[in-house]
Length: 617
View 1 (cartoon, one colour):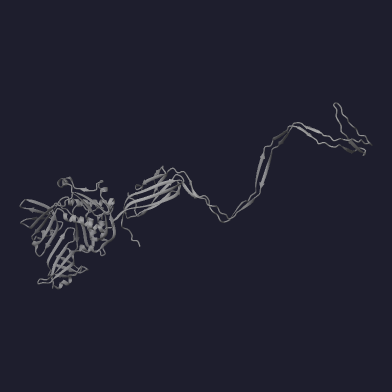
View 2: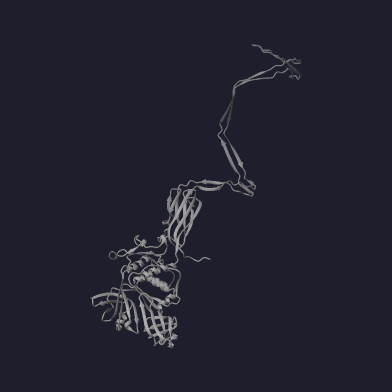
């Protein structure tokens, strides 16, 4: 019985005339249901695209393409896909990165399901708690969902439940080593048997590569002990030798996730795919339910007495002819051919992913500075730079530089100084000093004269005239004269000279103790400087004698250098607390000399920049 539901999941019809019903179920893939209706059946009108059907209470499918054929047995043939395919209808537009430490598998699944425009699916159970990082760009939700499980170790299976709404989705770990849930053997319930082994595409050494290009392409060496490849155990390499392959999937941006996916790939490829396609007869209801995807099965070969334990990876049922039903069991859920095809497809698909290239960019700074005010260079590492190869700096230090010696002033200025209080100053001398001058003596000659008459009035008031004549002194005696009243003598003095002799002598002056007091009253001075200019003298004038400098990164001293020139690799100095170089933020490099200095800094950054970022207009 096939039920039909409209777009709102309301049952609108039952297709009692449906025939040719078949179902294809494959592990970790979208399932399909096929059926036909007579082309004249009126219920064909209910079989509209994107409406839903359910067969015998099983999983829910939606109607997709249909084909009409008109002949004697004309029919409309319908192909339906599992409603898991509704996740194809929504996309992760742009670039999305989620996961890594602290974010578990269930949270990553929920992140994808949260991008449904209509919340058809919800997460039910998840048996894994890995912390892988995932990156998607322009991916459908279903493709992103399936890629979450690709790096998981061991067999897994996506399990759906469409009997409730929202539909439930679970990621289950398969137990392939337990007791068989179904037995199949010839001459009992096995109608056909086909065994296939293909050793042509065995791989025992796998080189996984992720995003990037050239030397900047992501590998696993950093998380694999420095070895860039994964290799099968010695027992396998002794059997098949070293067979190398390169697997490239640029969607991987985390080395741990890339390694895990590569290990799962190598585990699948290191042994040849062994698969069995088994046709089975109509089974009792108990066994019918066990013939399902993911169930363990044991195949018995009565002729040889051998048995194989495996699990079902695909079931194909033809409900009209049960003896045409078959299932496929394998030692793994994916064939070698499909794995290698997946490897090729990945390499084709990754061409649609945004890539990038190794970039080099530089900047320079020149500045005067001292020990307290360093030369600071700010530089930016964008978040799109997925790998920072190296950050190099060249520092040159010289003397502080000035470029002129004077300034210019074109306005007059008046400067006034004043003192409001009178002030007195006193100085004192100890006195008692004696100054002595000496003269060595000598003679002074008078000039000759022509003689003359001297008149004097005596005691009686009688004029007495002295006539003075030349006299001569003789040795041992002298000549004199006396006054005679009431008479006069006339003395005639002829022209003559006198000689005075000054003997050698000294003068002595004594200065007593004394003081001097000077009082300056309050006053002011006003000076007017008229408008003028100073001529600038151009040149380079150097100061300071720097001997070394210290290097600071983001305000933290990192190293000291006793040299005037240094070429430095500062990559390790930029690593932050998270053991990575910060992205999408400004960083600072500062050089502080030990004296006045002129600093020149040249910075070069090399890294792999991915071609993602905001659109510019």
